[in-house]
Image (cartoon, one colour):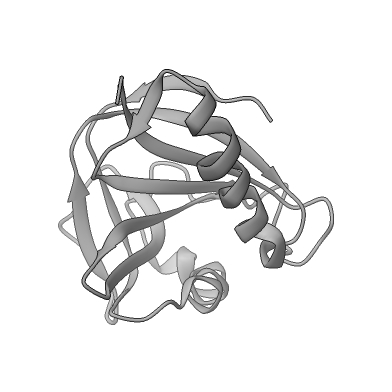
Length: 152
């Protein structure tokens, strides 16, 4: 597994969000069905999932698309804006049900042996649904972005 340092400018996402409980898989399935409702998508085939690290059991996840304009928000969806960050980018390959093992490798193997440490901020999961729309396929791919800083 290789990590690559990337800088991402601030951005806004319109999508379906949940607080307090882990529902990533359900939210990704739902946004795959409803993404065409988001008329201001920068690239409608790209799905972005964002997780804010749990704070005292308060888990937050939004699945949506990056947008150029936040004026038109479909019913049942919300808009969230995220600041610029430096990230480590990784590639997950395999069904979404195996995503946990990819994260375990990042957190327990890659990061401890690197000069970087994870910082508080949005962790991103980006999927090109024009190529990878079946969450359970062995060929499914997702780019994972972990917010980082140099040093411990």
